Length: 130
Image 1: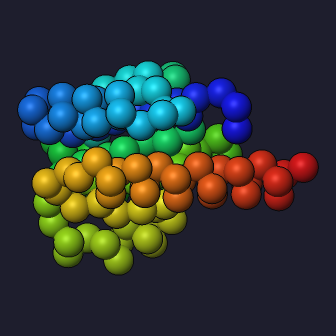
Image 2 (image 1 turned 120 degrees about the vertical axis):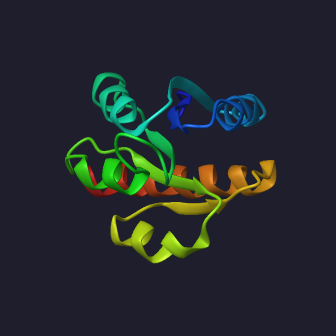
């Protein structure tokens, strides 16, 4: 994948959203194309912007990150990485086929690892489609 990985981020905590956007500046080949403050905005942005990756907080007003992932149609669905302070939702995250599950507080090395995993899955999907 030569073009940058297009990313939508969503978190209802403004500081966490800002930190996540700043972290993506240090991840080569990834570009944040949208930032949502709740689950409904995240769904709208994903539909409108068609990102490659969505990084979603689990607990958000309007719709949870899990609810956002479950509502996305399978065709054109971005890879999903959950970013949350709660480890209790990990099994549910993989039920909606998340690429990764990252715990807060955010560590840049762990976010990079999640992006690499999502990118690998996207490349595998492109190979399967060819």
